[in-house]
Length: 277
Image (tube, rainbow, N blue to C red; front, side):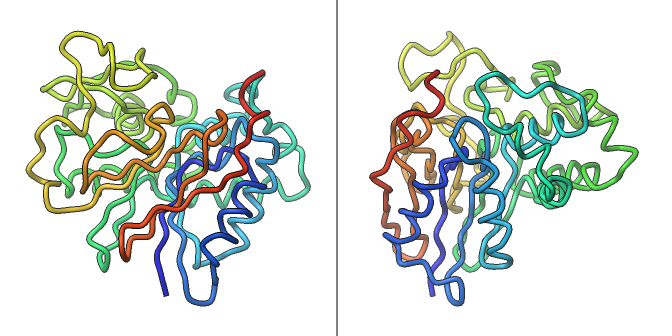
């Protein structure tokens, strides 16, 4: 019995199948923890959603920004991006069922028996673990409330506010919570987000740092698992911060991290034709 955390699949079904074969995944005994962005630039996002959903309780998922964008597209709040390959999900006979399943996935999960936390982009230095848990649950409730869902999707896009304040309400509050958990890479010592930098750890904007390099006493004794930052290629932070996005969709590799012993596995079949158009 083993727990595996898996980085951003982004529709790369072949790489996922190869990775599951490499780790000899057994759904009767093992559990997969997906770091979000199941869909987007890869060649078979529909197949990935169907595959992961069919795994039932042997697969746990947190939502990424691309997953949320798909939900917004499904409900007509945004067009499918030109480079995404998700239009067939919207028209699929099981499309509504898959979207309902996505809406039911959290933005933050704890894995107590592994002393680990998983969210797509990480945990901002201005939040404690308790705050992250509470605020993520708040957005999850919104996603499953039909009326609030429309408000949320209508106001989901945007970089402002870039700094968390407890007094925020409504769509601004939901947006900044979502941005911290699904879009964060850099922030300053106050916790203010910076969205323009998408490369690696060099040439950072002045006054901004990788979120995991800023002090946060709340997380120092807990493993924090995250994806989202493909340019890191699974490198960068030091344990107990674990980067999972190996940039498979950009020609890198799909990564799995075995929580039981800290060993990494990778799929050699990189999705070299994905995301590069």
